[in-house]
Each structure stands twice: as C-alpha cells, then as structure tokens.
Image (cartoon, rainbow, N blue to C red; front, side, top):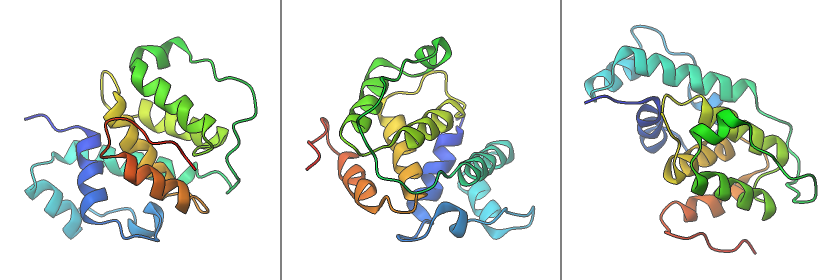
Length: 163
C-alpha cells in the first residue's frame, strides 16, 4: 500500500499534536534513531514518506505569517493553471469560502495553497484540503477560534456558517 505525505501528517496530527502547541513546538527535527521515526515505520510508513512529511512540517513552520485578523475585503484570488490542475473545484470553492467568511486571511490562504500543492497527491480534494487548513490554523498564533470552527467542519458534509 502506497502511503502519502498526507497520511503521515494525519497520523502525526491525530496521535501527537497537543492542543495549544504549534507544530513547530511539538516536533523538532527528528534524528535517524528518534523513537517517533521508528514508530512511524512500524505503523507502515516508508522512510522517504516520513522524511517528506517532516520537510513539509518544517516548511509550514518557516512560513508562519504574523498573526492578523482575517478579512474578506480585498481582491478576488485568481488561481494559477497549476493550482487549477491540482485542486479540485470543491477544494477551491471551500478555500474561497473560508476566506470570505473570515476564517482565513490572505496570507493564511496562500500558506494553505502552498502546503496543499506540496503534498505528493495528483489531485487535492475537499477532504485533503480541510486537513491542510486544520494543520495550518493549528500552527497559527491567534487562530484558535478559526481552528475550533474548522475542527467542527471536518466531520460535516456541508460547512456551517461562521458566526
């Protein structure tokens, strides 16, 4: 069974990330003999996928924008052809919805796009994008309310309005 970077990230997110700590705080760069690496390999992930997942997390931590309130006032985001090829229509629509509702700011949206495109998937669907958004918000200072709202959306078929 071929595992993807997203599978490793989801495993880490579900098993290791404590509420209130950022991904960067939670995971330092693992060493070859790190018990976490051994556990991930025991769980069935390949060393290459584990390494790629940690690289993905490092890039997320390095690109953390300054905390700022999300605002839906601004120009409309036009997707590049490479983004159109990789993100399905539902995922693109949901991303724009999150920005319009003030869940994501423009910088956070761009970070979500960057991290979604960095996955080793041929196409990023709505469910995959929701997980990326959740991981990005988890790593953003001042995004606790947006993270909590997004967390509730993970298990709904259709998003609820932001209040």
